[in-house]
Amino acid sequence: MKSLRVKVFLGVLCGLLLVTAVAEVLLYRQAAAFAEKELFSSLRKYAVALEDVGYLTFDNSFRLYPDWKSRLVVSAEDHAQFFEFKTAEGEHITDSHNLGGDSLPEVGEHQGQKLIDYGNVVLGVYEHHFEIAAENKPPQRFKLIVANNTDFISSARSSAVRTLLFFTPLALIAAFLISLALTTVTLSSISRFTKQVQSYNRTSSKSRLQLDSIDKEMQPLGEALNKHIYQLNQHSHLESKLLADTAHELHIPLGVMRRELDLLIESRNSPSELSIHAENLDNNLAGLQAMADNMLMLYRIESGNFKPRMERIELSSEIDGIIRPYRKNKKHDIEIDGEKVNIYSNRSVLNLIVTRLLNNSAQHAKGAKVSLNWALSGGVVELHVDDAGAGIPATDQDRIFDRHYRLQSHKHSVTSGTGLGLALVRLYAQSVNAQVSCTNSPLGGARFSVAFPVEASTDVSAHNTESLPETGEIA
Image (cartoon, rainbow, N blue to C red; front, side, top):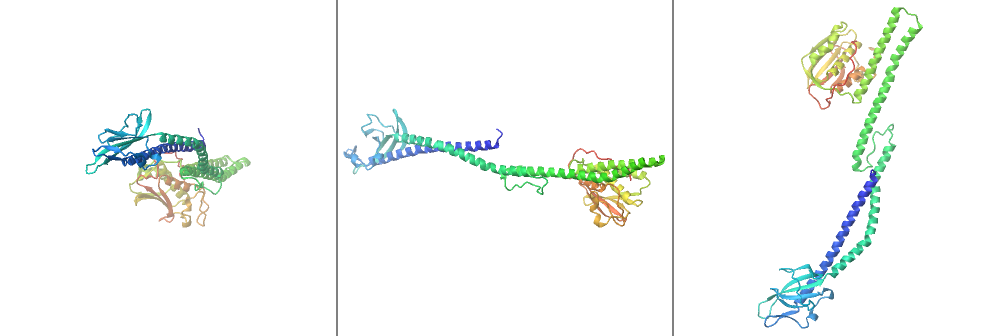
């Protein structure tokens, strides 16, 4: 049974039927209890009335007045079918003369009432104790037992059964209709929410489903759907950005390569000129491959699929290994200054960050001095890459990490490259819980700073190291 409507309907119907059955049982028992109460109430009244129609003789014997029946001040409904007077010790004195020589059963040692089997009938028996005193003599204790048949109780039970049999079909019909109505009302919130989900358009300005109209029990489902919609929108946004980046970045290198091919096809070049054109094509292809790697890495980081494994790293020895290729390249003048200190990061990510910052300084501050230094400050290790180049205006120091942003000013020509390098540096830094920024350098150019944590942080998950792109050739 996979229908929620049927399940809710049957659940409500079964609940109502159970309540109806319990109510009918209680009504039946209440009717019987009321009839029993009325029976013993009438017997109690009759016993009290009989107590007043007896007297003691001079020899202390109990007698009923000759006109005892006319002395009784009770209604016909309160008359008992049988009665029997006994002494306190249980010795028979007199009875209603319709017992046929039998004795009425006693309820017990104390005054009380009971339903007792008496032959082939059930009698309601009430036992009443009282005292009578003759003139100038001590009182005598007596016991009066009155009894009546239980036809009144049986009649009340039969009447209750007939009433319940009459109203039970009506109760079943009412339970069915109430269950149907409650099911409709209960599921109306689901129906409204279903229509809202069906009419939801991801391209609209609404980023979330409205949960005000649904019941509290459905709120977790609505929140889960909103979370799923948010994730879908994020992935869709990332895919759109990847497509836009691809179209943006492929346009220039493909145009350059096309021009190189046109020159090769249309002109008659010497072998040395052909070699130059082929080298240019090879460089453009390498740049195109690096650009594709950068865009794919951007997508992986922003989509949450890049989770480097964190470890404790001694920074000075790691920096020595990173700058070794630069020392072999005599075109680069890099000064190193920093003490031995540990950071909590990922080796590959650290290599990529430092390499890209050094390449950026070498590219935009050609021939200028470059300094790489670090120090422990306020619970983090701040690593600085300084150059003595033209610097970066204060208005551009935050935007320099945006995708495809290139400096344009009287000091800067439009820079070459894809415009993704520093954007990747910021994302790499965020992936290891580091912070990157740009300020003015004491050397007169630009300073790129990266603050690495020295302790493990809950913000970064420990997973197997993701494969990282090659750092590329030294610029």
